Amino acid sequence: MVTDAEPADRYRYFLPITTRWMDNDVYGHINNVTYYSYFDTVANHYLIQEGGLNIHSSPVIALVVESRCSYRVPLSYPDRLRAGLRVNKLGNRSVTYGIGIFKEGESQSSAHGYFVHVFVDRQTRKAVSMPERLRAALERLVVT
Image 1 (cartoon, helix red, strand yellow):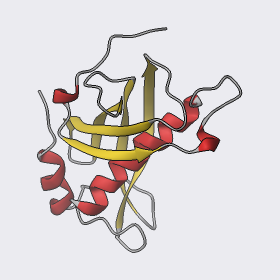
Image 2 (cartoon, rainbow, N blue to C red):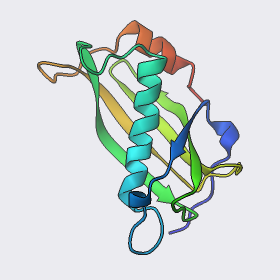
Image 3 (cartoon, rainbow, N blue to C red):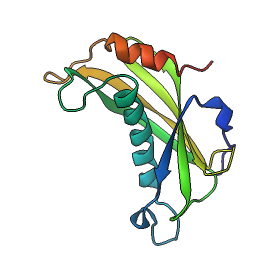
Image 4 (cartoon, rainbow, N blue to C red):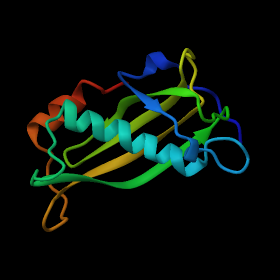
C-alpha cells in the first residue's frame, strides 16, 4: 500500500545512512526488514550521542516493544539516504519515535513509521523511569 509522504521539516534530527549491496533483495530494492535497522540506528545514535546512553554499561537500556513502517517509494543500493527522527509521544518510561527515511536531496519521505522504546533496568528487564539526561535529550525532539 502506498501511503502519503512525510515532509522532512517534521523531523528534528537527521543521520546519514549508507546503503549496502546486501540491503537489496532479489527484486532490486532495499528489503523491508532493512528499514527497521535504519530506524533502530537513528534512534540509538541519538540516545548515545545526545542522551549519554552507554550501550555497554548504562544501568537503564531501551527495548523496542512496537514498530511499524509504511513504504512509499522503493530505494536501492547505492542510494544515499538520511533518517529523520522525532518524538511523537514522551512518557516517563517510554518514548514513541516518528522516523522518516529520505533519499538524499529529497524533502518527502520514501518510507516512514514509528517505534516504541520502553526503558528498563539492564539486569531485571523491568520498566523504569528514563534517566533525566535521556529525557532532556528526547524532549528536544518532541513534535505536536
